[in-house]
Image (cartoon, rainbow, N blue to C red):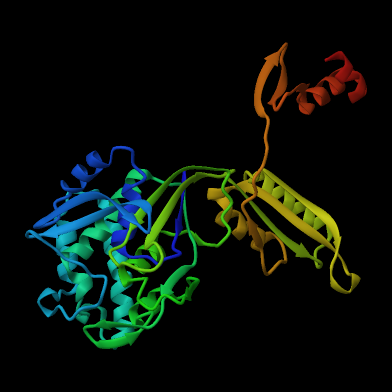
Length: 380
């Protein structure tokens, strides 16, 4: 199972948390679990909400009987906390050590961004709206629910940050606010004609931390569920964030063009890849620019092994860049049986069924009887 975050209307912590809750069948049970996390003075309330005619989920964080919001950067000096204070709250929560680590790492991302924006050390950074308990709740809920869902991969769309200006404790600043812009370094984002802040530092940090990839064109084999989280701002467009739970082929294709390796070197690279568990690996002759003959190197591997194989491709070939794809594919169901000491591979599906003995057994029989592989296949 994988998750795709669609951030067409930006990303805030409460929107991400609400969309994650919406992926669960029993939302009341999940909400009850959230209220057992030990967030101080905090109650989590789930409600269905309509936004622009679209149904979604919304989580309200009620602290000491009051609902707070950090959708704008207000001047909340009575809520100022340092990173150490945030970590003290996190350490007191009834969550796994992994969730505590994830929440701390997300706040460390925010602290570093604030530090760069305001010229202060990380330890001196004051968390204004981000230090409020509702922000701590949003980050914790997201980390807790992602651990509960346990996705194999998380992908996000580029982020819509909005436009205009935003009021914060440091005055009126352009969108994206400096801290948000720092967090979104190396993350694709864009401004739009929506004249308000759509991506908060909390939302940006959650995406930055959990997303394995940002792309506009994910490849879904099958979408299983869609979680819809609603924001608090009333806008001309539905203010929602959607999360798609999907299955993919589980396969990654890596490829590159190479024009400065010998045939022997290419063969060795292929042997290494296959010995390390590549699903397939091959070189194809191609012509590059200016008519130069070259090889197209292609490798198929399991998606969770892509980084390891990319490192191997750089090590054992001369390429300086690798293309990465997530192909969809059709496969026949396969099983292996044994008859009289011979392994039989059976493939079936889409109205097709076929069987054949493994070639290694054909070769072994040919050598034993001093016959050709054609004769050995007939005997088998």
